[in-house]
Structure formats: C-alpha cells, structure tokens
Length: 548
Ligand code: GLU
Image (cartoon, rainbow, N blue to C red; front, side, top):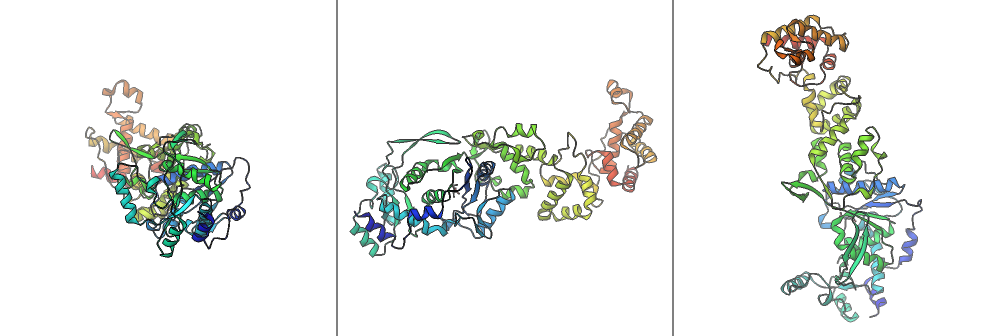
C-alpha cells in the first residue's frame, strides 16, 4: 500500500509537518534538573481529592526544582463535559494553592505551548496522525458500533481476549481501494494504531513511584482519533506531553495498564518518553478491609466537602502532605512554625500501593494547624467560612471584630497552644457564651455540691472581684473564697486528705465557670472574665445566685 496516498487521502488539509511542530514548540530553556509537569484533568464538574493529590505532587516537584507547572484541560470527551466545569476546576485548585505557571485560565490560555484545551488542538494531532499513516503505523477503521459489538460477542463465545487485534482487526490490512470506497460512501471512521506488540512479550519499565515493573506488551490496535477527528486520551497524551515539553507525568495508576501502548506511541512518533509517576489510589477502611474511595459512596472524595465541613485549606493541604510523604509528620513536629513550602517533598517517600485516607487523622492535623494560626488569621478564616455557611455566626463575629479577635486569642501563641478547633463549625459552640443573645446555662452543677456553698462562693467572689487585678491576684482571691468555705486552696493538701475538705479550689472555679459561661468546660476563666468585662461578669453571677 502506498501510505503517502493514504495519508493525503485522509488528511488532505494537513500541510504542516512534525518538524514544523518542533520549531513552534521548542525545547524549554530551563536550568538542569528543572521539572516540567502538568495537571491534565477532564472538566467533568467533579473535582476530587485524587485531583488534589496529583496536583500537589506535580506542583511540588515543579516548583521545588524551579520548573514549570501547567494546566491542560482534557476536554476530548464532550459527553462528560459539564458547562462551567473548567472555572470550577481552576478555582478549586487555586483555593488549595495550586498555582500554575501557564496553561488554561479562567480568562483564556496563558503561555507559549498552547492551546491548552485539547479540543482546540485538533490540527496539531492531525499532523502526527498523518505522520503515523505515512509510516504505516496507523490506518482507518470503518467498523460500525454493531460490528464492534459483534466482534466482542464472538470473542466472548470463543473465550478469546477482548479488543481489536490480530484476526479481529478487520480493517487492518484492507486495500487502498476498499478504503477509498468506504470514504466515498461517506462512512465514518476512526484512526487506529497498528500495533506490532504481542502479549507474549514483557516490557521492563521503571516508574518513579512504583519502581521496576514488568508489563505485558500491547497488541491492541487502539483508537488514536475518534470519528469526529478528536483524539483519544492516549494519542493526545503522547502528542501534548511531548510538545508541551513535559519531563514528568504524574497521574493515577489506573493508567498503568495502558502505559505499554503509550510507550509504543512515543516510539512511533519519534518522541522521547517522559518520566512517569503513577500514584496509587486513595483508600479508606470499610470495616476490617480497605477499599478505594468511591464517588458514589464517599462524600469525602469531593473537594467541595472539605470547605463545606469547615476545614481550612491549610489543614487539608498538610494532611495530604502527611499522607503523601511518610516523613512529613516528623518534619512538622521538628519545625512547627516553618512555612509548609520549606518541607522538601520527595516522590521517593510516596507509598507505591496508595494511601489510606482517615478523617480522624485529618481532624488531628487540622487541630494542630489551627492551633498554630494567629488570632487574626483564625478570625479571617472563620469569617470567610461563616459568610458562606452560617450567616448568624458571621453577623456575631463581625459585629465587633476586636472583641471577637480577643476571644480567639485566648490560649494562642504559647508553646502549648489550645487545640479547640478542627473545623470552623467548632467555633460557634466554643464562643457562643461571649454573646448575650446566645448565652444560656447549658450545664448544671454536679449534684454532690450544696447549693448554699455555691451561693456563698459566688457572693464572696463578687465582693472581692476587681477586673483590674492581674491573674495571680485574681486567683489568690478565688483561693481565699475556697479557704473561707472549707474548700482546699492547696491541691496537694486536698489530695492527701480529701475528706478534710468540702471540695477544692478547682470546684470553686467551676462554680464561677458555670455561672459566667453556662458550661462546665470553657477557656481560661481569667481571660474570659477580662473579655466579658465587669458588668457582664457581675450580672451573670448575680443571675445564677438568684436562680439557685
Ligand atoms: N485526563 C486524565 C484524567 O483525568 C489525565 C491523566 C493524566 O494526567 O495524564 O485522568
């Protein structure tokens, strides 16, 4: 067969050559060792944790090596595309600090290796499709859906392997005349790769996460261009990652089975294959066994889940770091205040088998992350959350920002900061008593205390209360109240002989706490009283006295 005739017949409009493409998209001028990688999501409208895991890995590798990270929108599957999905995608990634140096943006494309949306690259793919036809490595296949279904059924009956290969590849060796005839009839066709591989052979391959692998060669004549001239993922991957000068492809390991085909394509096209990092799946425990996170069963797979649940971006980010790099946690413990970018991310620390997702662990990480934030930052973040998810909370927080910030500052900044919040929804129950319209007596005094003792304690405290006292004087006064009522002011003495006392100074503090905060647990009482101010403290204690 004269492949030149066939190539011109199929692609009469293609005048550019692969050499022209090389000149248009030259090798990037980057320092030695700079990694060029990308995120290449499909705009389905569903942005998930897997996207973030992949994006974060690529982002770290690129930016740590002074390389380039770009965003390519893989919109070749028009059926799955959802309007507005590209914006949702870009904004969600930005929300998680995944910033691109080039690629698709909300305003259009930025960068000189575009277009970065695959459907706009049809002409480019056709240059290489023509090239493969010319080389005798691609051919048109006019099989209808029914014919393909029939092949499948016969393979099933014969217990043969599925797919378009060998004797099943009915258009593989057709004559030019037969092809012309089909074209003249206007029959739609796909362009297929002519594989010379055999499943008897193995290829050796080194993945940067999975290590050394042996994979079965590909013998299927996979589709390169669909009948509308739009490429399949495989063909677009080879062409785009070559022309965009990707050095490292980071993607989910669901692509591993088709890797032998991708390597065939790189070879056929005369491209050097990039390095690959295939990430194992995200799993969770389901009873005793592990399973992959599923879109249908696990709401936590969607990125939108975390914002709505009130997790700060940084918590999710640091949690994923914990999951992705086994040494991140130790690093964070040794460097509690370092910016997260200072951590040296390494693909060598990634688990080839995938990672276990654990929301309890995420909450732990989040508590630590929030405990290290300044009151100012907590204020900004919780307001940002409340604005979208809790209008009432937002109104309370912003009514008097200085007041709210003083509340949020309690227990922050020291060596052992308080860890009250894992998610922003924890804030309201923590500080509600600071607002009169929310304040209520939620807890009751434990039964074992005599009401008269409580009343007397409240009375004595009121008599001595002076908001200008410093913390030590304030606490000494509480001790004096304890002594006056036969409660131990010295915990050591109390522990030695509890029966000698009616209780201890912690109980007396608790009498005050319930009166002032309505709760048995609250942040530091001295700080609470300072913030509430004398009038409110006196009024609440008085009310409690009257109610007892
Ligand atoms: N569009 C592919 C996906 O969403 C991209 C895989 C890749 O990164 O190459 O799975």
